Image (cartoon, rainbow, N blue to C red; front, side, top):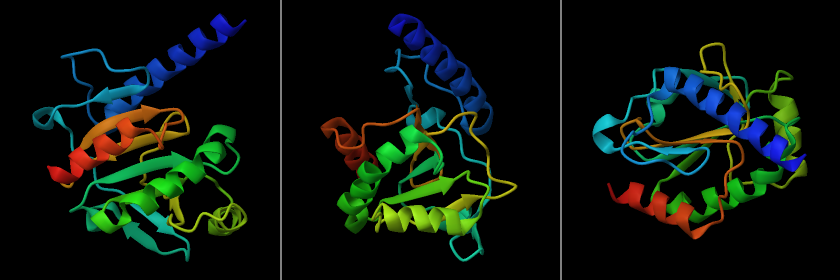
Length: 181
């Protein structure tokens, strides 16, 4: 049963990653990436197309206005169990790298409006993350959670489909290296 579940999850991740490539670029062919992650060399990184998000007050936030520093774009939802489970780690990640200028954009795909997300974040004591929701022109990932590590020019460095391991030394090292670029 577990082998069937793992194969199903890996198959879904492969399909989802292929679909993400249509929006955010393509993975490197130089070496096989870890499951769910694809590192893209600097010369092959695709720029994220312009899009906007809705902030906690209902206003529009343009992705283009946020470029200039590396960031993590994290698509999630309050009804997604794996998303909810990893949000405290993502909040801690933002707290850890905030002084370096690294930004974490947590974009909710909830359809209940900003109040649903604000209530969740307040109840979960997530104090370092912005309240952002997907707008009509925000690229919609095929699954949540999905995360994109983006360089300071707005190009995708890494795509993570499914929950990330945001408290690992490797994650911190990747972000530190990106900040040094």
